[in-house]
Length: 132
Image (cartoon, one colour):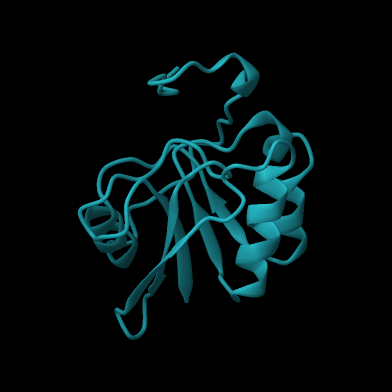
């Protein structure tokens, strides 16, 4: 199984990014081989549909699960969330901590989807973290 984790940097101590489509990096973690691969998110600076474009990119990488702190309203209300789910992928929202901790938690089977999205992306200011 391959898990795509939104991350703020490209190493295992990186923090799980609070926003799926606007993260700087994705970590692909293979639960069978325990290998990780980091790559930059080319959609992060898109004016529109960053989440949808990121979802399409990850679908093309044959992932099974997408993980982030939050998925924005455009993602939740139809865009990227539908893209991911229509391809049979699982989505886990509300994740935090560092990438290594999260991969270990997945192996232990203790990660759960919070079911909450971020519905005020347009109002975010620099440094804002969704924790509501």
